[in-house]
Length: 439
Image 1 (cartoon, helix red, strand yellow):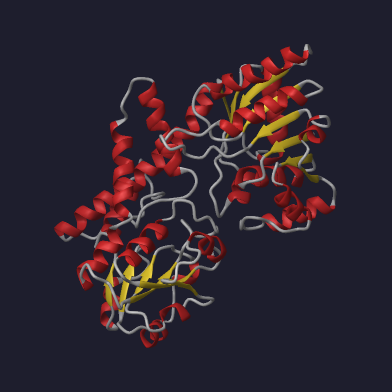
Image 2 (cartoon, rainbow, N blue to C red; image 1 turned 135 degrees about the vertical axis):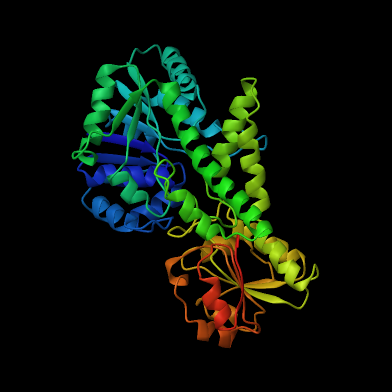
């Protein structure tokens, strides 16, 4: 098939690249000329495992075409995916301005019948608004091209996005047109040839499914973080509690890890947008409001532990910090707990030496010209003359470090672990003061 994907962010680039990997001709369209130029030169703007290889191979094979011209894509495609960003607006709602502009452009440019698919995460009812915008532009042109709307929400996890795209656990198709549904099924057939993983529903339910899924996962995280805080008060160990809870097959172990809060591009904005959706409809989502509150407070847990140890004034203290991205496997710094932690520590007088295997560049852009943070090339270099180690992101290379090296580099054998990477009893035996979440 010939496909146009509008937007070359995480969702658009991964989606387009994976469709091209299956032999489709894919036009990836973006208004950012520098980004398109970089992609043509083999420079991938995001880190995602396997993505660079797939993009470059299919670009060289001419299955993947990068362009700033929407017309070039639409005149050669039967399916158009909208995969532009829907960031959180100041009022907490999803900002749909780019989505609606894209819809307008499609109506102004399309020259043939088209299936328009919303891949972007959008509030309930957006698909119908897009339909009206496109039809309005077609009416202005006095042309009568047929188009069908589909909601096809993405469920990609940053760090494993390519794997999730190639082997999805489900493909949700929101549409009321049987021919269109069959076409989208045909497009996805190579990904689900071993199992029928298609779930077909109406557009509004498909739109809601994405928000509900992310809100549920965010709720599990905040719930366990709240339980972890109670564990600390009563002398229980959240690591053991997780085993007891997760072993119940009705619950399972996923997203039950206590930590220093969730971040990223999805959970914060999707929970907020779902809250606003409910409020606009006249309902106040009590649980989701608390999910947000717990998460915001959780990002301060490590800071509070450090201040309990050293006092409110952290002047003349330096800390080595491992992990900047909001999760391992990505360089994404959006809503990362590390940002809150670093800013709070610096505001209290501390200096930071930070290391992350992938997120140094975007982190440097966030903390540009801040003289109180230094970025290191090696995790152990971040410990030199530091008064303690802070672990924020659970990268694999942090799981089994050389504790003798850590001891030799640090001023104090002191670790504040926001991801519960180590065994407290083992560390205590070798002389470390070890502070973790919920134990």
